[in-house]
Length: 85
Image 1 (cartoon, helix red, strand yellow):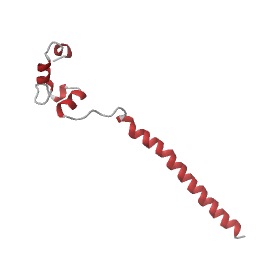
Image 2 (image 1 turned 90 degrees about the horizontal axis):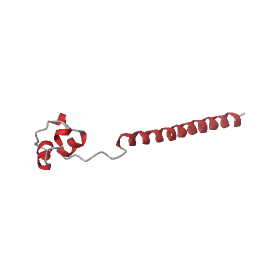
Image 3 (image 1 turned 60 degrees about the vertical axis):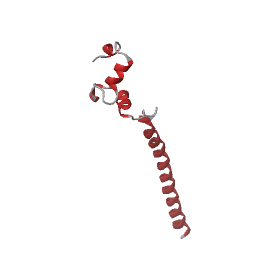
Image 4 (image 1 turned 45 degrees about the vertical axis):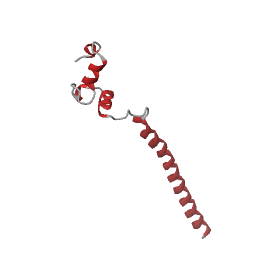
């Protein structure tokens, strides 16, 4: 059934078609209709990018900490080599 045909249906007919136990198959429904049919909450607004943003921000911080540790280790080793002379 097309969206145009849906506009001629009453609210109760639409519920019978789209809600749980309805006549429409799952593969005919949109993501929002599937979530409503099966009682699943909608995704948060930034669902698709929130993990990416956290990892992008964490990577430079971890890299900076690693570089600082390497520089500190190198400086410490250099100090002991030069102090031992």
